[in-house]
Length: 90
Figure 1 (cartoon, rainbow, N blue to C red):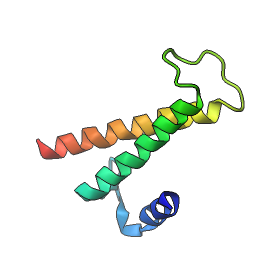
Figure 2: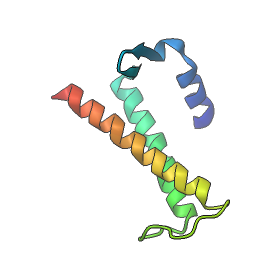
Figure 3: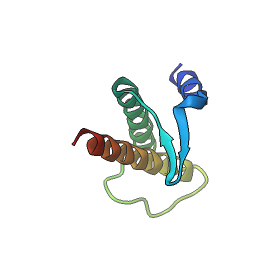
């Protein structure tokens, strides 16, 4: 259900605006919170799938690599969104 809602959310053309610096994503506060929750679900779910490692994973294979990538990318986007929100609120 969340996947379908997310795809519809991202498919709205007015959601993204091209700028000289890149692409601007327009979100309300409630949309930001919802998106952060989805990213956190992805990050934590991938971490659990990988066996909840405390140390960096030393060996990757075709089974673990997609989950490590998803975990890292979700964390990356969470941090960028929070940094952007913090910059807007100061």
